[in-house]
Image (cartoon, rainbow, N blue to C red; front, side, top):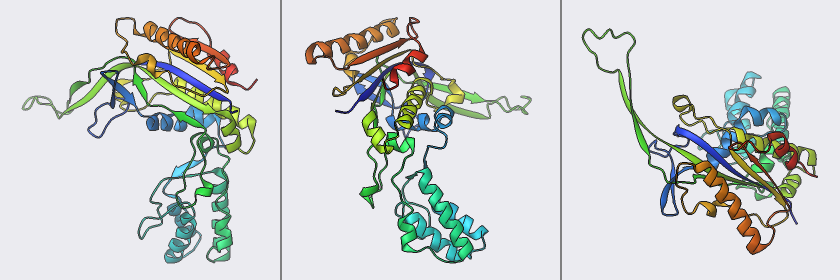
Length: 345
């Protein structure tokens, strides 16, 4: 049986627009008969993965998501003295290893998550082509794509539609974060004044705008299959535990950056329940199917979460071997103890 690590988080954000829809409004979801604020799992994962915290913790063990690999290779070939036509052809052959190309371009049509080993192989082949003044051979191209050992690819997976053999099954699942209570999206009407306008002739604003916002206490859920992650990382348990710690810290501390400069909506998780065990994972979102009301939403939400975990245990038996809670609302637990709990015993 696999060992699962589950994180249940409650994070409070002041007025903000963390994750916008196509109209620029905060994203929402309808749940339990009420409209809730929502932050998509895609937004959460990207902000965690690209955060300084995550990047510094796993430096040297992270891949790159890009469509521009062929463009970079083409530039390097041209700088190495290869004619533009040949450089485009050779770069296209290299980029094509990682996905389909845009028409008449060396740019990939979809983002490809390229591991450090694959990037090094591409760089080495590019250097060889420049030195030998020749096109890449099929055998060399076949060697470019490798089974990745990048921590972020191991956690979040990758899909190469043209060659499923090189797909990686994600070891981590992230739910969309939703508020535990109903929300009303409000509009912020704002103006900008021209500093050089003395107001002698025109006292009007130089710009008028409007942006949506709302405040909320969000429930977030993360599930990591540790055994799957170790398998994705070719048995490197130390790197797997390092990746789990980096992801957990980012989930607790890193906020989405939507409209961050306008709202200053940085926040740490106020409450975390961490669970470990081989039992089948389950979200605790049902705890908030009935919206939390009242003026002490943090305490009420924590109580709802803990009570729902107990009810699952009563009905199904113990749903986790061990649990650890961090409660910044009441000052119980510690971040260090939480990180120690997440390490494999």
